[in-house]
Length: 281
Image (cartoon, rainbow, N blue to C red; front, side, top):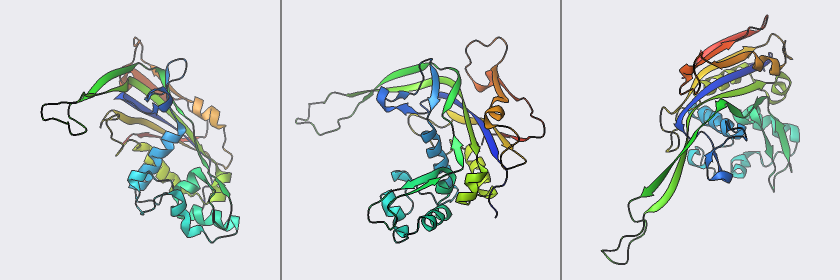
């Protein structure tokens, strides 16, 4: 299939209810917020979830989580070992992009010792912003305990102190995810229309198989996905203008939203710009 020929912009809305969408390690793993109280999900976190979904679809992924490794490789260097003898940077880049969908989508820096190419950087066509909630979010905390001994006690009667901890979660938030796919970079990595469809499907089902104690099943879902396909390489409109054309506004009378139904999500149509409106999976 030929490489992508039409610029793409996309916007997704994710509902978070009683979950920690992205903990901040510098703040006791509390959900990320900005100084005004708006919830945030980092672009790195979103790309991780997209990679996981692509992997679930059977795609070869270079940056895999340790608990999801499907090829036995224990490090990125070990996974890239098959490219070790390639000395030409262009050939290295072409081979890596052809082998792994996340490399030709998001790009990757290869900088490993004992490789024929000392360092190779690939710029990917798919860019994603950090997600930001539409309104300030309320973060709630819960103290938790462990009611069994982690280590055997010295005497049968002895019982060690319960382990204390904290769980933090967003009561409710509607997060906006924005991104674009650049044609010029797609031509360099070999990113195709078929790859774009796979990214779209991954976004629609972003939180499938993403369950954890911090994100119980059903606590996070994609509500809407808007997929804009321009009629040329550079796009009829700037990505900023396209992203601004989608609005999520609180319904009349709603002061503190508690579900996605408290918002009206609509598109201000831009002339001659094709848009596909999709439900989450």
